[in-house]
Image (cartoon, rainbow, N blue to C red; front, side):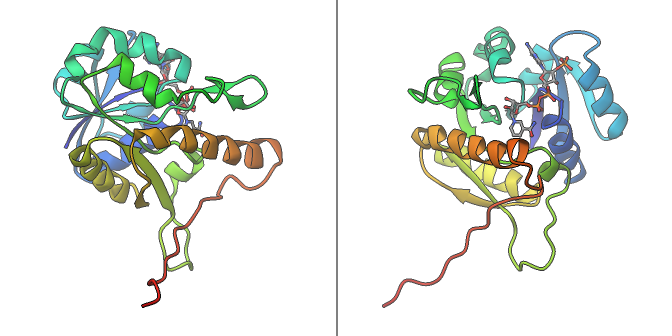
Length: 215
Ligand SMILES: NC(=O)c1ccc[n+]([C@@H]2O[C@H](COP(=O)([O-])OP(=O)(O)OC[C@H]3O[C@@H](n4cnc5c(N)ncnc54)[C@H](OP(=O)(O)O)[C@@H]3O)[C@@H](O)[C@H]2O)c1
């Protein structure tokens, strides 16, 4: 898949590098010339290249949004029209004061992202764990992959994103329509509070365990 990353920081850089290693054509979108994070990501992986924002988005089938939530509007407005029909993977989390939901729990950040790019096919994914787990998603000895919960309204876009989730080393777990994004954002806050505030290991992920329903 041809993929553009808007945001090449702690989240964007490891995901971009891994997807490029898996054979995807990955381009880092440079919203402003001389972006320090883009320079660092290019140094980290020789498989990545950078293009100006509009050029990167124009050439992509899928776009990752991995900027701070409060930068999403500035990042997406100039390319909103170019997003039509493309898969938009929303990795952002709106975080408010005191690690509360940044939109007062009234609406999800992904709903806001969808409004910014109304014709994009938004899927929320890669949002519920810290970046450490995108750097290294390997949890030996469990017999199952870490679960990556994702949601969106477009079934075909979700199939594409499920493939990208597998490529990044996670088990894709479809939790429903984009309406579920609000709950994924709260799940992310739970992780952040457990790890960043209470000091648990950042290498903490959820697993999806299933058993057959009784007959
Ligand atoms: N950190 C985590 O563990 C984690 C985990 C899951 C989800 N998230 C979410 O993922 C998002 C990214 O987090 P992060 O930790 O990767 O942040 P980060 O390391 O600070 O990286 C932010 C990236 O966004 C770019 N950016 C900032 N303003 C921009 C703008 N107006 N237009 C285009 N690009 C812009 C930055 O570029 P420059 O270098 O040019 O400033 C940088 O590449 C956030 O919404 C966060 O809530 C974070």
